[in-house]
Length: 315
Ligand SMILES: Nc1ncnc2c1ncn2[C@@H]1O[C@H](COP(=O)(O)OP(=O)(O)OP(=O)(O)O)[C@@H](O)[C@H]1O
Image (cartoon, rainbow, N blue to C red; front, side, top):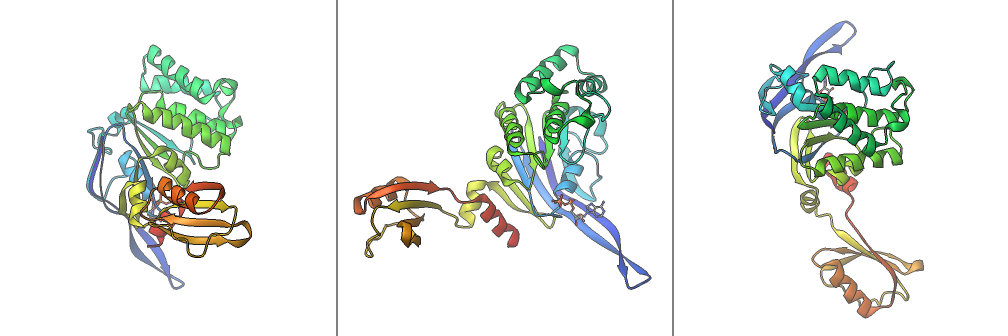
């Protein structure tokens, strides 16, 4: 569905040198990205500020002409075939709007139907689905400029989907949303992704979006791909482990050892112990611990995606 080979984008910028001189400098925003994304995949495309994410998305959507390499989306070359590509893709940029500010939301949707020449039946069926899943009915008659950010974002998602795109590009779709709106947007996207009809490419700094939605994570830094795989593979690469946290009824005996796990923390006052599970399942570890000491409470903590991604960015 999406293919890039050694995709590159450079920008020529003028930087100040001394009081009067300006020097030309070339910024390599995307420095050779090779990717294949299959139909129906949900891919998180992340990286630190300035890594080249937006520039990549702009080349995939035909907004920017690549400086080098190859790119194909829905079997089309994005820049020369931009008009045809527009029929096959939907785009949501959290910071920008594709709606008409002075029109009620439903009129924006009607305009989009005419622009994309969507048959009335298809339009109404898709709109009905979005209205149900995104709870649009309370504000369909409200002018876009009066919508809250959460309401507008639900409108943006609908607008991006009404022509039935095969690929949806999302750039920070949950930025600035409160927890309830974030959950609504994430659930909607999860449901959309589960149908397998739409390929999702999601760029975000909110890693909870990625954890909830994306099996595959592509991490870019300084314009280059530094990880392409599952979140689990990233954890494995950095040796991040699950932990077993247990509140004990009595202190842990000094001689106690848990094979395949490492004791990483003891909070003396609460008799709370934390083991990193290196080579043992949570079930085996619990069984060993219960046999040795009475336990009041316990939990298994998954490795934190923020930690592992921060380590990747730092590296
Ligand atoms: N039009 C432009 N002219 C000059 N340099 C640019 C232009 N657009 C982007 N850049 C530079 O290219 C690099 C990548 O920018 P890009 O916006 O793609 O990063 P990003 O990963 O989307 O960052 P962020 O997470 O902050 O949005 C940055 O160094 C940026 O300054």
